[in-house]
Length: 393
View 1: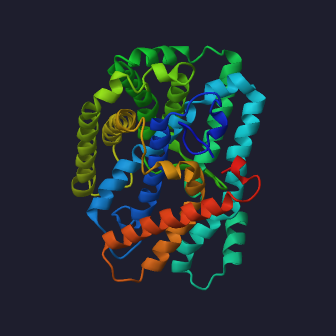
View 2: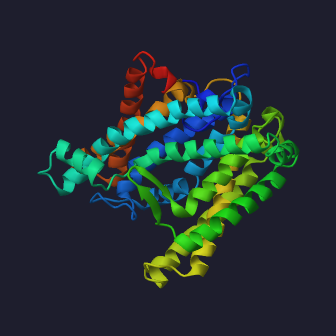
């Protein structure tokens, strides 16, 4: 999303220099970056985000899956190296690094990348508006959407909370770390505890706020019902990373990597149940504006199980098969954070360009995805040639 070892986009600064890179987690993080690009490439061709004349139900299946786990997993991976970074640098130095690594890109992208991306959408409805007028209206009157960069300011907020908790007690996350060490032999125990905690924090928020409620203040936005879900993922990751991460749940020699098929079953079942509820909402409840509490609560349960299970499945896969040797993901690892930052306007302008072409949705999404990867990767490589840019990208 540079050298980011097992973190979400933007965590190279938290990686202990003396430790050997964990190829499994490097590749999982790069894979997640590609999932973000896939997600944004197919949204216009779905039932939910149908902004193109064509659509394909398979893309609805992809978006339901990706939206249910990928940002939560990014927070989990971003938390893995937070605790040792604070211990090594001190809270002030850690926050200074995170402000440079997260805050600066957020500010730059909010003023440039995001308006450029949403101008493509505005131009479709208001072809007479110039970019300068659109940009000025966006930053002075709004709305000022953040696109995917909302992740950066929320992550910085979690880093700030982590520093405060570390000041209160450096041992605060030791119970999670002990659970991780126990999880080397019995990952199901860690799974059940994490599932219970995330459900406790997510389900009430989902019932109270629903699925579509967002906090928005200028470019600062986050989904009301998910912010505590993201926090639990982040701090579970931080707890695993307190010490001996390579000997705990995420050990390549641990049991988690040997039971990947179990995680697949645990992911498929709630995924299918979410589709059952979507059918009920559309065909039986007739898509009401406000869904009943029983519906939101049931959906939240299935969502939570799927989210944790699919994360375990992905981690188990990369731990089992990708710890050594080479991978097609390796060349992209150093550029993944930059690709996360710059891909959005590329994706939206490609969709704007493809709109008028009489092509199947699969063809449009395929072209959009391949070109988004290629252009965002090339642009990141070019930007990283600027002196000092490697400290950010």
